[in-house]
Image (tube, rainbow, N blue to C red):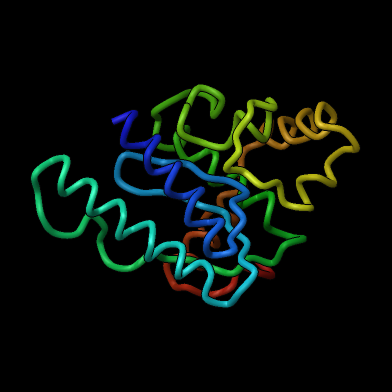
Length: 175
């Protein structure tokens, strides 16, 4: 499974570059993936997910001698109002393994961007968003400010709103 996850992250990096997408946060779960992505073109995210999905399903089907699709339907997404929700979405993503009770703290989960964003662990896939960069004037200050964001629980209304927006494919704004 670790090799599968590493390959997925390699392909995510490759196709994010090819499609003009910037990956700000990610978490790989056993049955789904969460990504926080900015695209330079209107079709960038769709092109990224299509290329990544095709590559991954071919690999999985060949490696595990199976056939068919891996995911239930197309990917779901929502546009996010940057100022109000971007860092909350990033926290939502990186806290997913905690909500799933796989770990007690996001730093314990190896298949997430948390350790890069909060602890400075090198990760060439993650391209920090300007709002993340605005948390501090240097990496240590930014990382400390980011870790502070995780001291409080996410508001349950925000979690519900984020899920509704993502499942409905509409913008996350003004909750």
